[in-house]
Image 1 (cartoon, rainbow over the protein chains, first blue to last red):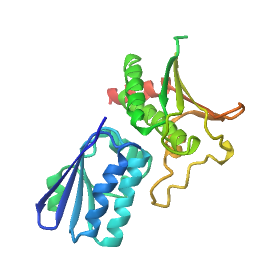
Image 2 (cartoon, rainbow over the protein chains, first blue to last red; image 1 turned 30 degrees about the horizontal axis):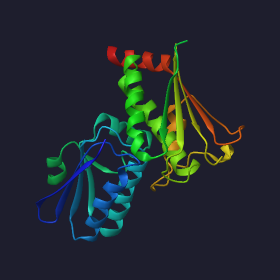
Image 3 (cartoon, rainbow over the protein chains, first blue to last red; image 1 turned 180 degrees about the vertical axis):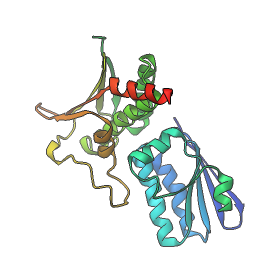
Length: 112
Length: 147
């Protein structure tokens, strides 16, 4: 399954990345390639919408952990929204659910 | 015992989606609960990814053979490769206390599966066998439904 990535800038210094498709070994580098440069910009928050992702593997989790690390060193907020049951389960098995800022909707993440 | 389902894919990440789809269909056919099915698919995907990364040293066109057995309460999968053999005693999940990218695949497999074994007693490659007891999963899913 191919992956689709859509970048939006709903307001100044806020970026949302909507991911649609499986994040696995074949597609996680595409997610990384779109996220990495965003942390070089002066963004207040980078929000990743995972509502279109039903499957994520360890390489996808590793990519998001990298994003978290970049956010710590760049002062950008890094937020995940709309985790599907399958994705949430993988985060739970990895014991990472509480490590990220996770929101139910994009609106909540934007308002926070 | 039902006939095993066998699938051989080239050792390239672009075929991982195919193996996930085939396994999903098989687990649907056997009415395995969604959460259990997702977890079993994750383990098979991670095992194949490890073969690509470590067994074959990166994406290529070497074979990865998966054989799925569902026999009563047991789900068993065997993943055979013909790449570099590993020292199975060195395959250990990493400590999760440190938040860092990578190294979670083995943790997922060990956490989800009931039995995991690596056999390298052959001329080339490794045979990974993973077993999951479905009965306990079915019971806990039924108890969840009652709540």
